Length: 487
Image (cartoon, rainbow, N blue to C red; front, side, top):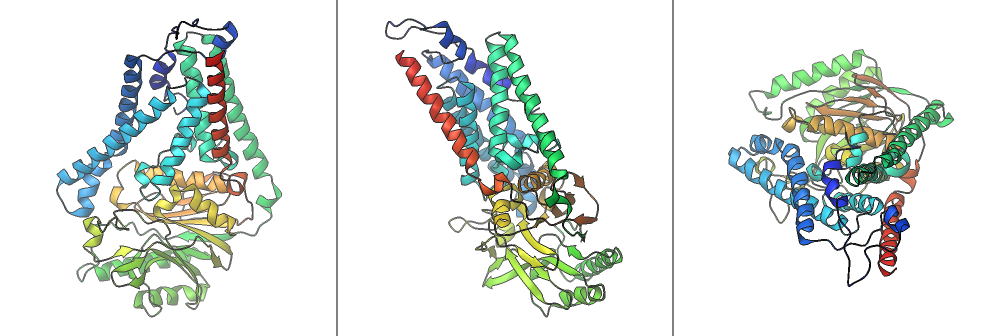
């Protein structure tokens, strides 16, 4: 649907009429008219129509995308549903006006390449501004993530490049329909077919590549507790929850894995090598020589913790620790001292980690992504450039477990796996868990086989390349448009 989703909104951009400007003729040549670089004077009514269409697009999309806030925010703040409604409306208004602004800018030059570059660059700006607010991180390129072949080009052109291609196809379709030149629909159709064929070829070549088949594999068990986040670890529930984790660990051990992957903050207190539960977990798994990637917080200072993943080797030796580098703004990390109540009620905030270094495990270097970091291309690419041979995503989807965000989170992880060509195992409490192979193929079982590799894709090595290409297209279309006006 992403290939044509924007067509209704883009139709008015191409439904314009040429007008004389300062006594000049309406158009200088049929060739220029046919090319789409037409000189015209946009009327205020047309401008308002484009802006209104942007509001409708942003409002319709954000009403669906942010609907989870109405009930989700009160559930973890303990406040009334009116609090959730207020934040929901604020986010809808902000996103709607942002969409309207992007379309209004794109309207200045009704050229498909200009519009596609503006849209893709707007997504880049949004990614930069809202990295700690993942509910704002929308890429139209993510609409490809459900299709195995369509997602493959992300390893070359990144999610930004994929967004550019999708918007370009939408623009070409809208232009052909608006100007009733139906034979021109062959162009976006051909572009779509070529893109899908390219994806098939990339998958074919990757799955038969030497670097993907010669590395040693290891088995990883996913211990998914599925404990509702509203359940309190207190004197009433604490012992039962501990016994549940110990029983689940024994079930994992019976599968004879090399590594057990835990969920984000699976143990809801700070780490200590002398912690009774940690010692018991290691005591159970040591005879089988199993390593753990354990989600547990780190005490940093008074009322400040790190949202951490620990690599614990057999015998309890600590191989390394990763601290989440991009905490959730307002939820984990305060802004101007303001923090949502469910965290501040516990008396602590999260301090960002200072690096994306992978953890050294007995089976290779593990790049760690915690929760929303799977939505950040830079987080995965950075740890791969620093040597990560596979990726692990620890998360907790409990607060929105009955919403579309569960699937969105999983497919974000799929994009990161293909983008970096790294096997990615995800353990999400109350969410979707399993393995996304470096090829993009999915295995949603609790015992998976991971194949480390040392591949660095074009998207990883040159993350700025699609941005530079979009800027080049943007500048080129502006120059051509200005020259056309002077002709």
